[in-house]
Amino acid sequence: MIPVDFDLDGKVALVSGAARGQGLATATVLADSGASVMLTDVLDEAGVSAAAGIGPRARYRHLDVSDEGCWAQAVDATLDDFGRLDILVNNAGVWRTASLYEESVAEFEKLLQVNLFGTFHGMRTAIDPMRAAGGGAIINIASTAALQAAVGHTAYGASKWAIRGITKTAALELAPDGIRVNAVLPGAIDTAMLAGSDEIKSTLATKIPLARLGRAHEVASMVAFLASDAAAYITGQEFVVDGGLTSGAGVLRQT
Image (cartoon, rainbow, N blue to C red; front, side, top):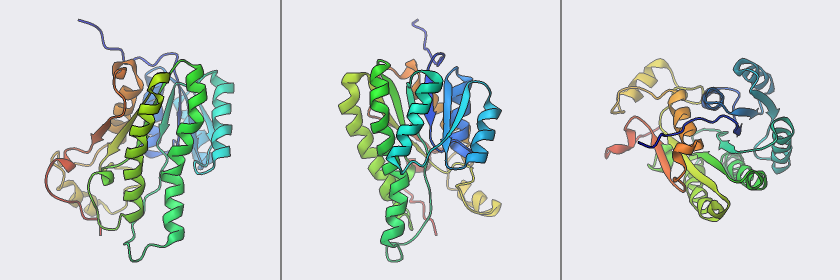
């Protein structure tokens, strides 16, 4: 039997939104798998602490993902510290709810600047160093909100549906360079982004076939797989990590 290689030894990753929650779990799992990791975020104090907690394979750099120039600086810092870039995880994102009627143009644009344009800037900035490295893996974090409509998710849903689209287009365009592009679609993951009391979370869990919220490391494990040689023949695809939430006919209603 041919062995499956999940080892990331010698690889270098940049993870956006990595100071806490799902991004921190992803950075940790990648480092545990052997990669050197540049954590980036706008939460500088938490980011520095997170990188120190991971250990010598990790560094931290400030990154406002909505700023293309800031992306260039973060990637340059990664190349200066580690010499290459093999893995990009576009994890940074913001979440809020507002009905279509109540949504403002300014707030709609603000959310898209982070969730959608942040992913766009990250992919574009990573292309040249990944080409220089002989290829790479880009993993974009979308959401099950890109599969099912949810009340109050006009802006958030739009951003995540768009990430699905640009992931597939980028996969086609970058395949000749050996750069694979895939998306991970988490469901209800128990991090700080998931607002609500324990009672609300317990109620939400009853809608999930596995009867619990997801854990950040479970999303991170899927990211690590897609970053590894075990996924060498996978590109342009979407991987749902939601405990079966989107398998049924029901629609999650966020009120």
